[in-house]
Length: 115
Image (cartoon, rainbow, N blue to C red):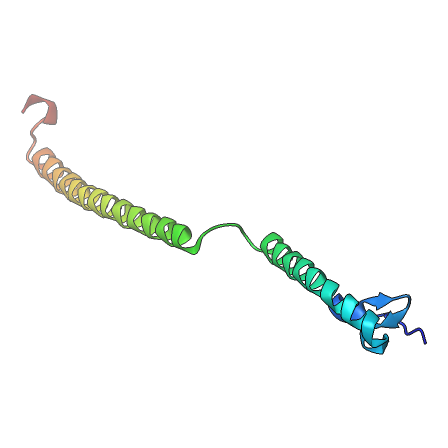
């Protein structure tokens, strides 16, 4: 009696002359099952290849190391930005005080270029 394997995948879909392995005579069933190990190995190998093809090939430890390096670089860059902002604030303060000085000297009638 032939049975359909429509919708079945893997080892359960294997038929010999349209008959499931469990429905074969004992001798043929034994011979087919001895070959089944090869089919199971091939199916497992195909599943492994499928998983490897689906996901990125990177090692987690390498990615974690790169993330750590990038975070360290960001911190170093932030330190540089903070120092530059301090310099800008300092120079802006000097500029403001110099403008006040120049106004006061001008009010006193002093020419700025002759000091």
